[in-house]
Length: 340
Length: 192
Image 1 (cartoon, chains in turn cyan, yellow):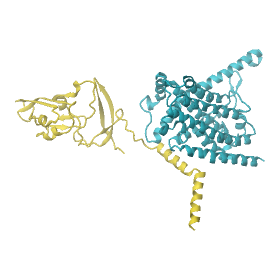
Image 2 (tube, rainbow over the protein chains, first blue to last red; image 1 turned 30 degrees about the vertical axis):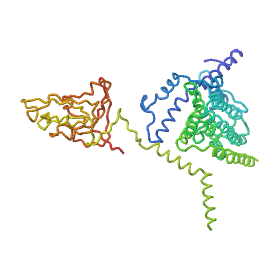
Image 3 (tube, rainbow over the protein chains, first blue to last red; image 1 turned 90 degrees about the vertical axis):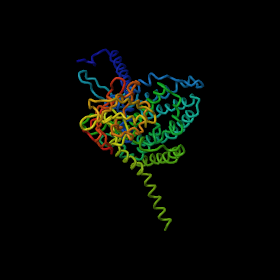
Image 4 (tube, helix red, strand yellow; image 1 turned 180 degrees about the vertical axis):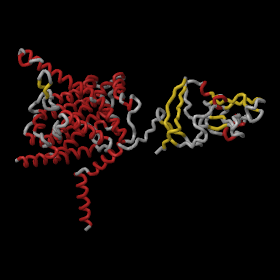
């Protein structure tokens, strides 16, 4: 048994810092590993929806396919076009990738748990900011610069168009996304993600009180993470591969990683804001409920991807500005009146 | 009146859009397909397609019921062959291994040149030559593509009276410089 409270205060603060470092490393590692199961899941979902089998030959039921892809991406030649802006071309994937990881500094995964034997309470978040939701939306918005810069630096027409589209799309849908979150913030009276989840305990989930807000959040979220039916920046049909057409090997993998982590971020936010976070029947621990809900959201995104065709770019803008924005403003107004 | 009905339709359409009816229907359809049986045939590792009797695959030389070679070495197959890939050298034989006193000393086919047209089969007067249903003929060596009489006289993987048109369990086997797919005819499955 370790009696932490009798120890030197300096030692305790060193241990606290160490604990935060460990948490950061663990969360980052989990996020880095996430694309492995997610690509596998995406392929299997796609396969079964299209009455195929999906990957089947690499290992039992194709379970080793993501590892094979990883090895392939590591060893492929890293090509930089000769007329590209070399510096911007190199940093674009990093600009895209870092913010989506930084978001997780404030995303909570559950109430604090007590580790047996040392009686140390550990919080299941890296930090609980009092402006958590604002931080998440602001930092996640930076990620789009990576796409714009990557599209610009490639010095090629399709990536350029992809980059332009992504900037227009992000600006339009970031607004609706933020306004959808405002309703939730008004319900919880706080910007902190912990408080927002605590306000939803005992089945007072925001999906019941804010259904319109939830659907706006869902649609704008799909647009934010560039998935079909709103994947304009990487529209295979018209733009080749969009903003990352000129990227290969690990730089391309960084963009893919960004997209998958962004998908997890939107799923996590959806769960935290509208589905009560880790709240659920008590026969399973909170973290399990949390993970199950996030997996459901991820499945929903994959399911829609293989169901709907892509919207046209002008339709996308119409939906964003003429429908989602007014409806989300109306939602805020009605929420405000109800609270009064 | 007509104006009124138009208005009804548009209200219905607006409601459809507001509650995502079409989108939800689409999602239900794809969700249903998630749990249907796959149409993927896992050839050649687990399943293979057995063709119908009319299929023209690897040649076989037949025997009659007493086990005598039907081939009389008449060379009609070699003469009818458009690509000249069949070599027949006849010989006189008194041991009675054929149905007549003339048998083929050598009967060799070059599968690299054969186009599986089946004219040799049509030309054969004794029904000795048939095009069978084996079609996995890939190899890394040229020698394997020259098939001799002894190889073609061996019993076929798929018996001539097997109906075909089914999927059966199978396994891929690599031997030397080539591959073969061994079907298990006891397990049959219709295509749909």
